[in-house]
Image (cartoon, rainbow, N blue to C red; front, top):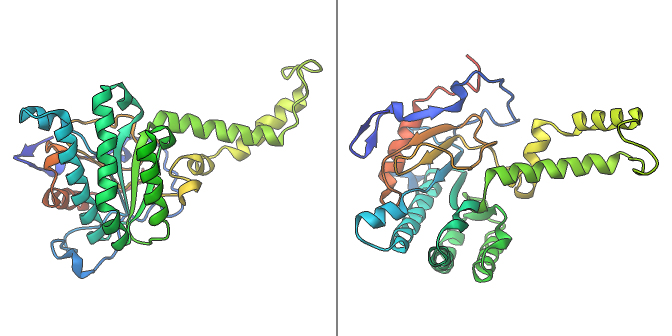
Length: 306
């Protein structure tokens, strides 16, 4: 991968679709661009850029950005919040339908209480200052993850935001909070298994042994094969039925030079394009975003085909 200053060359965009895996497309999954001609896209040349339907961002580098400047980590998170606001405005202006941002992972609880508490206070501040603009710009806010476990004050503000923007039809801003993809996958598996068990009458353990009851075993196996499919499993994820079946991300961006998913959208990223930039998240600008989309536009997305 080659970089030139803060701009990356096309080799910095990678796709997991380059791997020799079986291609199973989901409904509208092959659509990866929209025709947008809104005047608000003055800085966006649609003759040279495709607009991804869904962009996901791992917002990384807040702490390192602050440390480099001799500032506390929370100063980095505050600067990162401003970058998220700008990225949301750009995505809305350019006609991107879904923007998913990795705000707080299940692993982030391991950080100091001061930092964790500060992050959620910033979240409250963000909602209080931006809700009116988000609603005015027709942005719909969703949250993915086990977010009911976050501090109550932040939870109440989020619920207010979700309710206020519920009927908006513009950009879908999906905030991943207390999110971990492995936990999401386990949650989906448990949900599907429960559906199978509800349909199959399993004899009481003291009367029969499941191992010896061949008919019951075959019935369970048959229903597992019918009920548990790629499509049904996708619908059990946070991005599934409960949020209207958000399409898988076309493009996943990670800032700060790190090149890994860090437990983010592991199932949904099967055919996503990847873009890694050395720019720290607080320095992520509208122009940097546009350059990444230009690079993405040069990709030939084959979804496992040739």
